[in-house]
Amino acid sequence: MGKTLDIKKIRKKLKMSQEQIAQKIGVSRCTVNRWENDHWNPSKLALKEIQRLLGNQSFIEKHNK
Image (cartoon, rainbow, N blue to C red; front, side, top):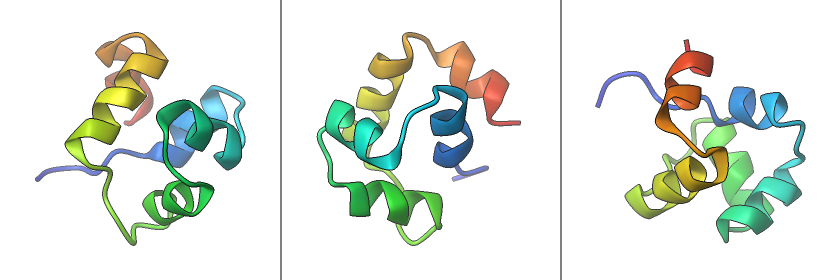
């Protein structure tokens, strides 16, 4: 699958709490916490919601290095 998406880094860059990003994406805060701690990976649908929230893919690529 390659390098995993660093949700925490992206969330911090957006200056959002786990609760805030969870509400925007439509998942629970616990789910975001699990993503950040590598217990789960975001689903394709969740990744699309993150991309929609961020506005463009280049942000993810740039800030996930």
